Image 1 (cartoon, rainbow, N blue to C red):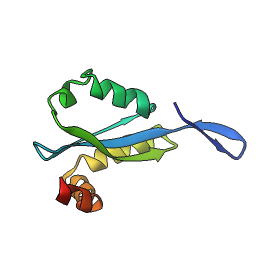
Image 2 (cartoon, one colour; image 1 turned 30 degrees about the horizontal axis):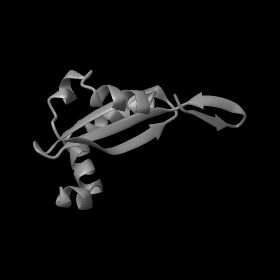
Image 3 (tube, one colour; image 1 turned 60 degrees about the vertical axis):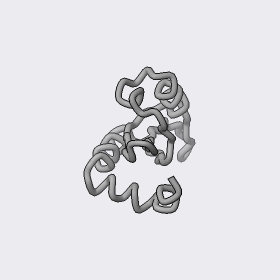
Length: 97
């Protein structure tokens, strides 16, 4: 788990992330407090949803200082508007995918 030093106190970071499946052209959005561990779990098939994504690639992540903020952002990115945001944000990558 990453730690950030803010004003003399240590805070833990929370991450919102998105995988993209090039074959099915879909996003998977999640959040975690340990991005490296979570990516490893996705890559070895420990996560049922992404285990069906044959060509998944981490394409986006954000860091938050609050777990609640990360959970809310995850919810936002899972909406139609949020997926539209990801498509606009990653436009150049997705056009080449």
